[in-house]
View 1 (tube, helix red, strand yellow):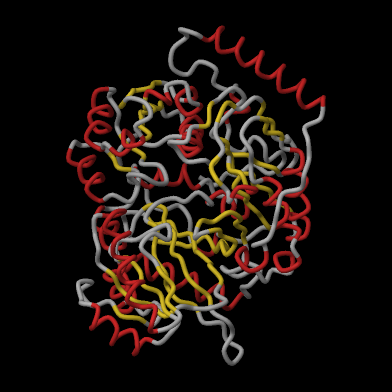
View 2 (cartoon, rainbow, N blue to C red):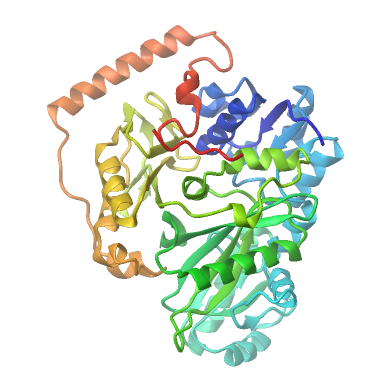
Amino acid sequence: MREIRKLLIANRGEIAVRVARACEELSIATVAVASEADRNALHARVCDEVVEIGPAPARESYLRGDRIVEAALARGCDAVHPGYGFLAQNAEFAEAVEREGLVFVGPPPAATRLMGDKPAARRAMQAAGVPVVPGFEGSGREDDETLAREAARVGFPLLVKAAAGGGGRGMRIVRAPADLEEALASARREAEKAFGDGRLFLERYVDQARHVEVQVLADSHGACVHLFERECSVQRRYQKIVEESPSPLLDPPLRARMGEAAVAAARACGYANAGTVEFLVGPAVGGEKPFYFLEMNTRIQVEHPVTEMVTGVDLVKAQLRVAAGEPLWLRQGDLALRGHALECRLNAEDPAHDFAPSVGRLLLVSFPAAPFVRVDAGYETGDEVSIHYDNLLAKVIVHAETRAAALARMDRALARAAVLGPTTNADYLRAVLAHPVFRAGEATTAFTARELAGWRPPAAAPSDDALVAAALAEFLAAEGRAAANGAGAGAGAPDADRFSPFARADGFRVGGA
């Protein structure tokens, strides 16, 4: 057992804010890292200390593992939490943290390395009895002639995928043999640029698939449980935008089989801490819905709050306890699904212009404070949305007894959310929620492309009241910044009640960890 008293959070935005809030509840001191552009960002304000790690805008500052480790040591930290992205799935960074005697709040580097190599992960899953999509791994360095021969064996349509891929980069759908050569060339170029690794492999393309992932939690003593599933089929350009739990697709027997497969996957790579095993579920064949291993995300994910809402387990606090060496306090029989939860990703983007990022000063940010509505935000009124960083403003999460009630609650929450300044995708999210295919629980990964390709936002001009509110909000924000000038790290942090990540879930406070 190792006590964690002070933690460096190696990320930014709502990611870092979420981790800081869990630490506040555990009385763990926090250190934020920030580029020069982020020195006054919300994640820097809510942490106890801030270390500036690079000039503006320098997105790469957050990727400098050496500087982050140096900062953790200089500030007397016991541990480093890598957040959800950036360094979270970098085995070399985890090893560097551990070499300095610090606790890495994440899985063992060997597990990250194995699951980060997609062909190796496929082979490991097959050995563990976890179903995988038919395909061809090879060495990843095969010439195009060999890949064309294997593609004919796998069958069309198929996917060309980067061995070190993620986020849809280095991936191409190929529907006919004549298209394969160009797909291989473009996927290889993109993979080399994005990951420095041009290796490719092939998988059969599962049409009309559903994207269902299973949350797992394992300790370093050999115990592992799953916390049921989240459905993430509603995506744009391979990026998830709406998630829910439980999946409307799964019945209890299929849910049990997928949970068991996820635990088997975690055990096969020697996993510890929180992770997510992602599956594709294909159309029913003979009454059975086949499911296939897609990949394992060796980190906590953006959509983790929906699992927290239906299970009552705080996953970030669980991460910290497992990282400190505690044995798992949960058994599979202790866990049960309660009600239905939805999460929508509210992004600063303009749906009228091909979802281009929208930047600038946030003149007003206001979310509804309502029972069973939780908002995990990375910005507040007066903050600046930069072109250089992720455009996720906030995650709006709701919980209700039924899926229909959760849909209605989410629509109300989005309708009452006020963001003045950058354009958001709120209207698009409401269109998703209102669509009959989604409401019927039948959305596949092709849903947005097939059903909402021609969607346009409603024309609406801001009311006089909105403009007055924006002006007043800007004035008050400027006054607040002036009053806090020179107050040091943590100035302007919310009070204790607002600081809880579950404060907006009135009457349903997530615990268990």
